[in-house]
Image (cartoon, rainbow, N blue to C red):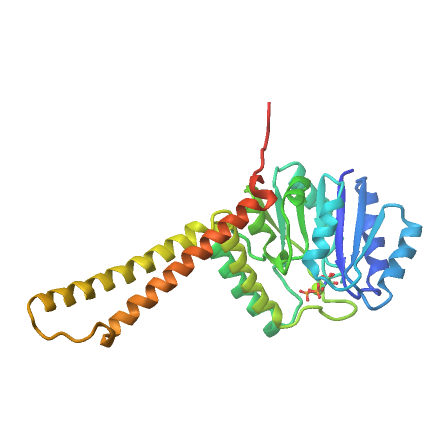
Amino acid sequence: MNISVVIPLYNEEESLPELVEWIHRVMETHQLSYEIILIDDGSTDKSWSVIEQLKAKNESIKGIKFRRNYGKSAALNAAFEIVEGDVVITMDADLQDSPDEIPELYQMITQEGFDIVSGWKKVRYDSKWAKNIPSKFFNWTTRRMSKIKLHDFNCGLKAYRKEVVKTIEIYGDMHRYIPVIAKWAGFHKIGEKVVQHQKRKYGVSKFGWTRFVNGYLDLITISFVTRFGKKPMHFFGLLGSASFLLGGIIALVLIIQKLVAIGQHTIYRQVTDQPLFYIALLAMIIGMQLFLSGFIAELISRSSQDRNKYLVEKTL
Ligand code: UDP
Ligand code: MG
């Protein structure tokens, strides 16, 4: 099979028939074999029965229904587990992304050798203050942090080599960072294509202002987990040892001062009267705790089964 089209949806009953019809038309014209995977992310409208009707008419459709709303990342992840096409295209269900882009995205993966091609909504039809400006800032920080040169990380329309989606795992709100996750998993050829963008035709946007807060928390998690997830001791152990050492040195200095004072029979104030003593104490206790946290995290990461999860690209 050439292409799997993956479409997560939450209360998008009006858009679905039009979208499926459009995709079918494009695939027929370009003679591409395909499947469409529709993931109903716990919709409360009639989306699922619409999917059932569509499936009765079109064999290429597969449906997944979540019991409740788990979010776009979970929906994508569930679909990625079952995709069969050589190239996987993700798109939003709200008709904001155009299926006419699919053949060219497919070309870029199969002919030009990209691992991922991300859409870029160069001209956007969303509200300026609620979306366009915050998203510029979001894209800028993500670009700086990941060193991936994309303009529009969160574009719903993307194409992947099948291997990519079978390798990565996304949860939380991490669908915004799939290129980043993929890059850290060793897929470096990441491209970009300017895509058409329309106004939302039916329904309303499913993400409110919390998208920004959650987005940044996820960015921190991702960078932290990928850097230290497999070796927590490198983070906690270092900080803990440094803190403990600092406390130890201060305490030692205080003790020596006291001993010298006793030796010279001069009057020296009580160690417990000195602020530095308490700082030393605190630094040692915190240091010890950081160290122990690191140690426990290390034990956990070692006993979790995927400790050997590295990817062999080829064998002979
Ligand atoms: N979506 C989803 N689960 C959610 C929220 C959204 O599957 O919890 C789907 C939604 O139905 C749409 C896509 O994700 O197909 C993008 O959502 P939306 O168009 O609301 O986002 P926006 O375009 O406003 O960024
Ligand atoms: Mg949308």
